[in-house]
Length: 314
Image 1: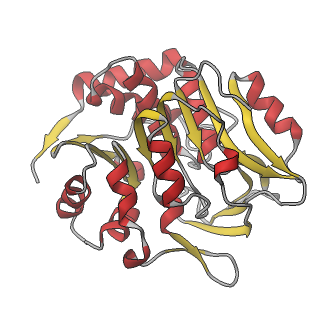
Image 2: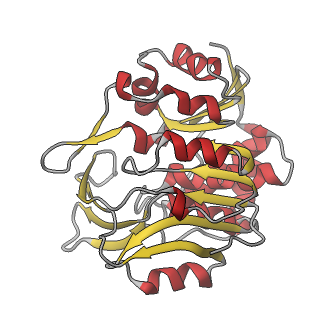
């Protein structure tokens, strides 16, 4: 189990997703989880990428082969035959995908030190838990395995009721030391408020910077995103999609594209433009089945970068 020739390593659980869409007779079953969307976005934009994860005996080998065919290194994915894989049910109740309920159908195992390849050393690690499967101690270890640590805290913030329905965890239960380890934090607006315990955007962003995070990305769906680098903020509009089929994973694709461009030495504004453009492509297909062509992503990003970005004074 050795990760070879990767610039980006994504750490977190896969998810076996069941997507229920209003007006469709049957759910759509798909490979999900931030690891899937982020790694495929990185690879779509030409950067070598690997995944560190663990799956259960129920995880189809065909999914791993599908990722291999798309150039994702899954050599560090460990299978535990006696476990089940994390599974979510995603229900969209309206035709414009503005209302979603998320239910944990099955929780897989926690990622431990034995799941991390010996001698792991890459330029960028993106840590993306989805159901609390990564501890502070694992995060601290991963900090020493890379030059640049990226983080999506959603899996730290979620808890689940007796039916598996996802609720955001109370702010005081979050281990704040985690943020002190990372260089970039990608978070949704609701998650940002829970993470910081604050209800005003500018104050919440400052609070994340104050613990040492250099770059904060706040995704806001159709309203675009906010990019803050060392406290200098920019509004990044959402790219116009040709059609919205399924918004699942858009934020994960955003950070994947951002990191791919960061590795090329591009400015943060350009990285965010590519993130928005790539996110606008993935929503045009169901689940993780569609990422579009890199040239179309580039075209959409250029439109944003040249005409649409603006500084925000908060």
